[in-house]
Length: 284
Image 1 (cartoon, rainbow, N blue to C red):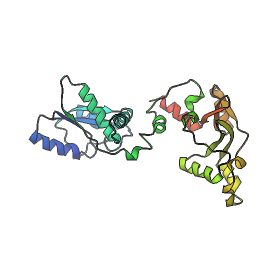
Image 2: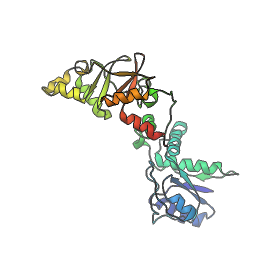
Image 3: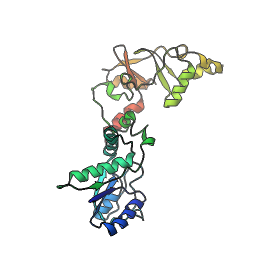
Image 4: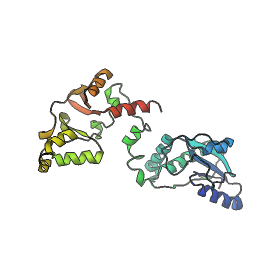
């Protein structure tokens, strides 16, 4: 075995393997896979403990040097950003059918970098050290990845670029006019949102929010059996996808969520948070 790629959390894996291979295969070199923002790669390269950043990968990377870690046999260190780690883990699932977690993506990305840097064939080992089951709503969710700025999507140069959950992509959460208020409330709770567009096909016929729900059911809890169509706001201010930022800002200034259309076809909602997220992603 020529090289082993490891990550460091507590340092136990690296420490244990280093001691073992020092006896049975001292020529085997170790490669550190470190999340970008962790101080460990810098410590290995120059002995300096700098200021730690932040990272989304879980289980590895530190802002201190773990006492169990042993870097004597580590010859290379790779700083792996969240986007590269998550994309690599997703590629592992797509190509090999292995549902692994974020730290595995970091290790595999570093192993691939190491292998590409070699000039002759080598036997390199790394680990699938965590399951991807707990990442189904995060790393394996395209919309979460987009919100975090870890995936990009085609840009149109209009308001569509600010819609986080597009209706034509099946991502928008909506209600039908004949859905009960109980269903509307359940969807709001499930998706942690405060308003829903009410649609007939692709056409917006209303908007219903928590205030509409409260007004409809406050006198009688049995009113949860009423329909969304009976409680929704029917006068919906809409914007065409070509509208400028000034019109979007004016919509927000009036306390409304932006309902974006292409002609009469509903495209999605834009909230203030969506705009802030889009601006934040430009900094990445």
